[in-house]
Length: 219
Image 1 (cartoon, one colour):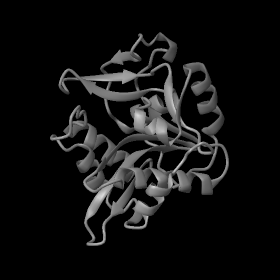
Image 2 (tube, one colour):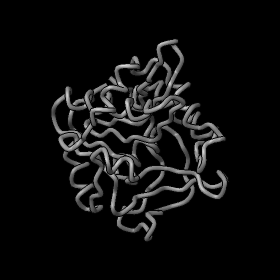
Image 3 (cartoon, rainbow, N blue to C red):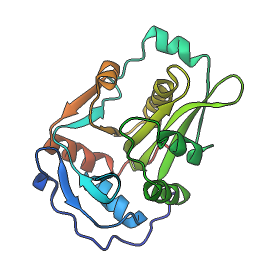
Image 4 (tube, one colour):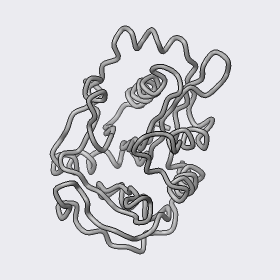
């Protein structure tokens, strides 16, 4: 079971105080207790201003994946057969892949990497790894799990469809765990929408979040 860290020393504003782009607050820190308090309140961090400021977001609407609506097409299922999937075997390598500075719109700073590595050591952050036939890391994703919430933070691929295969594996694991589950993807992109991601209004997201937090974790 995960280890509960020292409690957060900050007080976040209520999520509905966020502005039109979802920005709720600036500042605070990335201590484990702060991060967990944020996710439990429906809030997540993201550096802004080139990584110089730490921002906290609660967007409305919120991107989620309903596990029953998730669709892996025939071509994606065929692609999955080319790879081997593991969980929590290479967390640092997955985060490093997601943080590759050559990727457009990169936001994963050294401070973010260190913070989520600490959450992983405490049992709250997890990775899904996708390996090619030669044993090289082809892609993956990582996120934070609290009860029945899995907040997917980022994914990457260096081989075709590897990040999508990681998402398929995550959905299958969450489905197999049973109970109330909420897969949070923050903002819905066109390719996530094609896989079954849907926007939900903030009040509905917060209601579902409260319902799933008591569920046992899937990892």
